[in-house]
Amino acid sequence: MTSTQRYLVQGGKPVSGRIRCLGAKNFATKAMVAALLAEGTTRLLNAPRIGDVEITRKLLAASGAKLDWSGDSDLAIDASTIRSCDVPVPDSGSNRIPILLLGVLLHRIGEAHVPVVAGCNIGARPVDFHLTAAKMFGAEIEVAPDGYRARRSGPLKACHYRLPYPSVGATESCLYLGVLAKGTSIIEGVAIEPEIMALITMLNTMGARVQLKPNRELIIEGVDRLYPTTYDVLGDRIEAASWAALAAATDGEITVDGIDPATLINFFGPFNSVGGGVSIEGPRSIKFFRRHPLRSIVLETDVFPGFATDWQQPFAVMLTQASGISIIHETVYERRFGYLEALSALGAKTQIETHCLGSVPCRFRGRDFPHSAIVRGPTELRSDGITLDVPDLRAGLAYVMAAALAKGETTITSVQRIERGYGELAVRTKGLSLPLQAF
Ligand code: EPZ
Image (cartoon, rainbow, N blue to C red; front, side, top):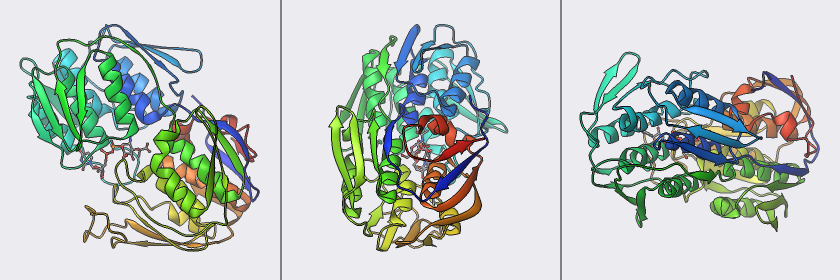
């Protein structure tokens, strides 16, 4: 992995060109965990060689799995030799994978010791749904000072559980727990993001019996064993949307390869409303540009099929170039606007509100969380040598976009947080007219 610490970006010009988006981090890492459910070697194609995959590789290797890369993106995971139930603290100190290993190790070893770790700093990010799910499937959970200790006596048993919120991670935990449990489980209120659809499909190719019913309900008929598979990682819809927003924001033209347009279904509408343009160039190849002068929009993030919370940051950067007052109501995470301060340092006119500025029923209503934002535009962004320190992955790419928009030179530090999800940007953006140097 790279030892890059900072980027230097000379902005102010339209960004155009071509880039291939990586395999989706938020599926690849979950597919790696799923591979542990079957003895034998599972192969992932189009797996991204990024920090979070490397962190997950080390966590799986600590349990005894053997992982080998061939070529750039073909990852073989041999899970025949799983023996340790102790999940170490990830190198980065934060990552959501350890809690997902709980169900898998319970099945394979009968026990799991999982450290308490956060993800990106965007909200409290508790794991209560994961723990309740494990208990519903019959696991005993003990809270220890260093994490959670789970064990089972006998096989895990099917259950009927209604998730309090369609959490992506908790849905994944229920899938891992349910596929090898005895009996048929019903899980209500599940997340249905494209990465979850891919995980269900992958598990079914391993011999699982999972059906998604209407109204967010999963029926999981437990089986005695699963078999290794070969599975292609879908393209990263968050990355694709970021390049789209960069093209429209700078009035450039960016062709993104390796992305299925269907995974951007509810991105295109708001993108087009703001003034973006889209042209399908070939299978999994989309050109993004500015079709009209950009204009403001009212936007609310939501679980899929709503507008993704991970699209919110690149979109906000684009909205600094739109005329009028744009409003964003973030309903998934309670503190995901910290990055706006950095945009303001570059001249963006933004304001954060604790009120719900929208109509989507929101868990944060009346709770004083800074979860709504106002962006006034258009504003010319400028940087006279400003340094921005990256707080989290998605905000990090938004900083790169803002730096590309801003006239002058911007330094971006703590870029290892960006590279955890996007790889070496200086290398990957060679096909774009993005003046970014890495140090
Ligand atoms: C996944 O996080 C993604 N991460 C996130 O992307 C993404 O933003 C999020 O899903 C929503 O789409 C990965 O896949 C690794 P959640 P996850 O459980 O699964 C609350 C990125 O940059 N909640 O759907 O952790 C939680 O606090 C990241 O790639 C509980 O209250 O998200 C949040 O408000 C950022 N208790 C909401 O649910 C729980 O036990 C949604 O979280 C679990 C979640």
